[in-house]
Length: 502
Image (cartoon, rainbow, N blue to C red; front, top):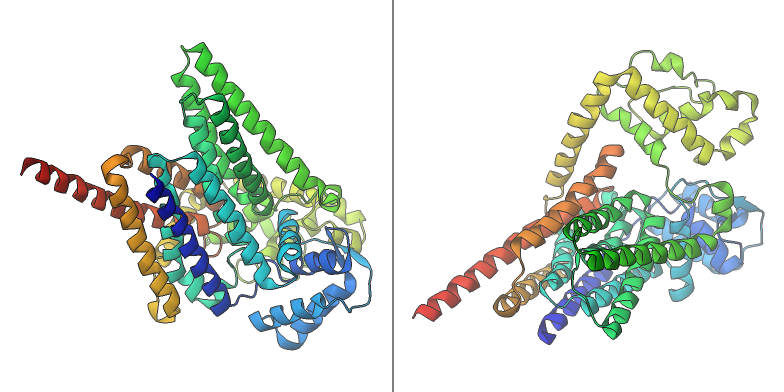
């Protein structure tokens, strides 16, 4: 039992080492963070500006560097280092309007306070939280469910062989510790919560307190994950399913049913408390209504995936060419389609340009985009059905296929070495487990399939691509790893049977 836990911890350490090598040898432009979140975090950590605001001179330092050198990994690091020296004159305090919510700035600031105002601090803090989550899972589950730890890190290490690392353009979009990769941090906490609600065992009082402490760690990390990457809210759905199925299972057992309700209620209260504490750290985002990411903007701009976009008379319905000269369009920057709806929004016709611009990605902006999404769906049902039942699923399949493209010649040799060791460790774990605690095929594959199924929801609302689907790609690689584990476990069972009959 102890050896299995040691192997599980070793799998995390191997991945953490590989991730550090990947971050150092494959620098990123931090595409989702460089324009707003990074300047805002440095403004807070170095210049004492309240979280959610940006010092105008810090922002000018970033913009000046990018205007002079372009946006490259080197220029982003240069801008961060220059602003982090702390010698800039204090400027005006500006409100952030990046549309990815408050969680990213909160995490970046915490990482820089802990490890210093450097880009590498972000990945280090991400891995630190992942380590805490791993220890909490190992502390709670020592039976066959423990396989999810080496399974996770074997799959994640293999993902370092994919274009997520080897393609510089994609790597810049989905950096380890960045917004579009952050959902990976929530996988173990979500699994922990799922198994807790599905568990029918009745532990003793001291063990129950320990279990709640470990679950509390996971719920805090999960709350942070969902604030950083709100698209990963689907991770709560498997836990809800586990709670519902457990309630049905115990419908004739009042004692067990009440225990389940207490467990569900306590977990919900803990999650709400942790979320409230984190939200309270960034009052400016609360005040401006920009707590989470922009759901309806992404849903609307995803209409460009249909080859007939813009449909019918939509260009006439949403007249915005005064401010967006090209109007609704299929090629180019699709975000401008969302901006077009905002400029055409009736209440904005009596507002100043500054007021309209300041409202971009705010709560009223989302209201306008939500109305536009449903207007398009009900006005053009054929195109909507084609979009959601053909074109978007097709993009999901294309994304998964693209994630299988290993370009090993671009992978740093240390990572190839660590992937090989991770494979050996995973097989070793399965061999050690096969004798006493083999994993249950139906339960393990069923859990993974459930998470994969729900992970397609954000891709169907918005769109699938290599840089927006890290968790979806993870579930695919985890399934492949689990098939390898099943083959090893089956071989061990056959071998033992032959030895017993000899």
